[in-house]
Image 1 (cartoon, helix red, strand yellow):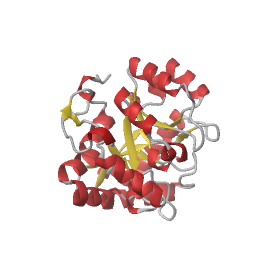
Image 2 (cartoon, rainbow, N blue to C red; image 1 turned 90 degrees about the vertical axis):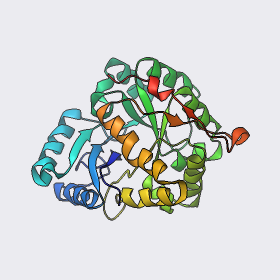
Image 3 (tube, one colour; image 1 turned 180 degrees about the vertical axis):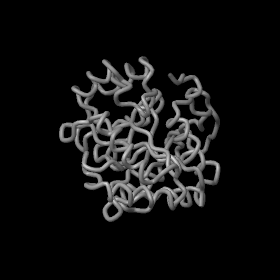
Image 4 (cartoon, helix red, strand yellow; image 1 turned 120 degrees about the vertical axis):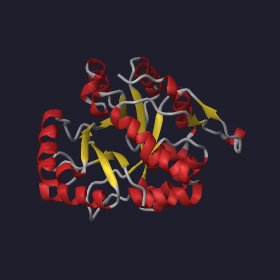
Length: 266
């Protein structure tokens, strides 16, 4: 088991979205993550047209859970930020409202169908303003599954990528599993997170994902994606130099680049 793992995408807070409905459900999830070696979780309620993100209420929920789990788990706050025009406009007014622990990293989610042709420009403006977009679970997005060239473009532009632990073990279907491993082989992944919602429906499985990545891609890669990079996101630090993303044209070439080291935390 890997210890000191950081899970930066997690629907832990009860009664806010499609995660747990009761505090008991939140505590069950927290205990399951503690048991698998997770020490830090970013609570990320949805921020979309269905669920309004309430930062203060989310903080209250965190305090309630902290009172029960004690000091065995450190809880941070971010959100699952839907890339809608309304959200993006509000982001420019106060990015710390949505980013992980009020720092520079932002989890961004696409709709299942249809991606705005202006999104590259939006990412450019986010990065220029100091926000670092983390594209969540692209392997589960139907549009990107059909054409992942845009994802490659956004990674080269400066976006980061998070895949779901369950995708690596086929919980979201063969296509998501296949795309997850293709992105890993390309060095186009920067984080693995559970995106946990409930023990019965979508449980945390970060330790299992860490073992899979260790077996197939090595301990260094697994630690980078489950420990070191998410730790940096949690505390608002710069990522260490990352492997350069490969494309089909340069598959097999492996080098280090320092682009993400240029990104400054606030």
